[in-house]
Image: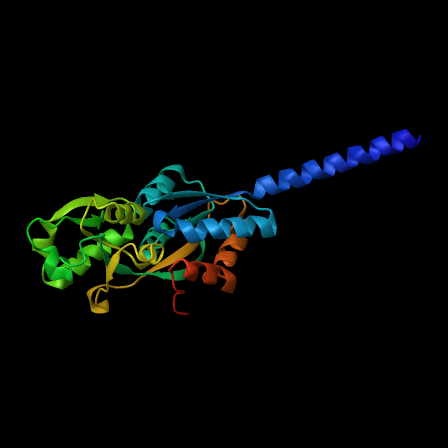
Length: 255
């Protein structure tokens, strides 16, 4: 009898563990995330998993590419792009269940190692032979912002003639500068903050662009909306925003 009772107890424990595992797996989330946000989001995904047991799989890429993928598949739990431009597009698709604006995603002009003496401002980007990198405006928010900046600089057409590469993600664009494949590029301030001392950074006048704000949207397609909202709340918490700031993304102003 004692052996039977022991076997029954172990059997019940195994069933309970299996049920808990199945429940946790059912809550696992899929998030579309702009590539430039990867360092803080990776850190927050791990912290969230440790706190809740819920795993989040992040699909990183250019926000425009991710939007096209979502529009094609109509699957996923969260969308975390570099700008509200893409969550506005999701609203047009009636795909947003909940939205929070998280952090400021601002640009700087980054100059490659060894080029700081030759490039001291935007006028220098127009000189013959200077290799300029920009984001692809169809693929990422910073690409569109860069076009506005060039227009406001008064040197737009001359600088565009020196553009040798257009990157799909801000991470890729920063690597082009770090590796010396271009002499300068308009990248995210957060990328510069994550590579201290490796790049020369030139501030861009605030009047030349509109600041971008990175949001998190809970998608109506989520199979686990409560867990998805819990992760969105986690990102927007004081601790979540402090993690973003550690990687060079200051909190967005309270609306």
